[in-house]
Image 1 (cartoon, rainbow, N blue to C red):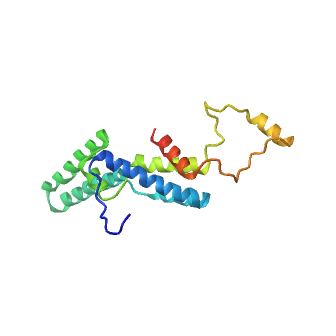
Image 2: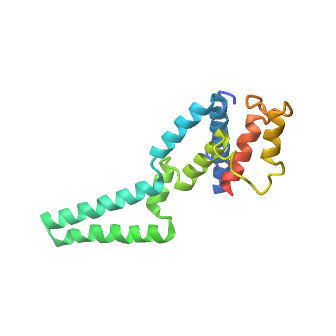
Image 3: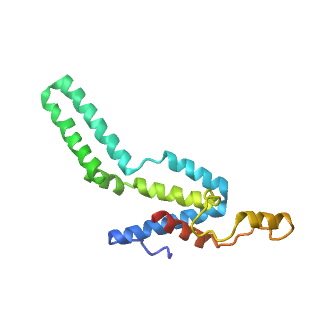
Length: 177
């Protein structure tokens, strides 16, 4: 990108989603190149990451507690604060979206689905699922191990069979479904 070009915000929600997917793919490709330790470190970071939904619930919970404290200290009119917060909390619980969640999203917090999507893609890239049977397995693992023991086919774990960029795109697509 030229230093004179000023990046603009995506014009539509679809464009924003595409940009987030590209950012995720770029981040995952760097982690895939850095190796399993970098992936494990990122997974630990993601376990501690606060999401927009979590921030919404905490904010509304604090508003309820503060409202009750102000009611006890200053008078019954402060009951309006926990009542309004409780209504917004119920609305968030039923619809999983609210103006407060949207505000936290604009502040840079991600949704829980986005965080879980990145976790799943990282775990797939690290190889956590390679030993799970799939519908698409067409080779018998016992036959392969027997051949390896007899000096036949040996699967080298260090040889990359897939380009990291392609692997990241496949992992992201799989995590989105």
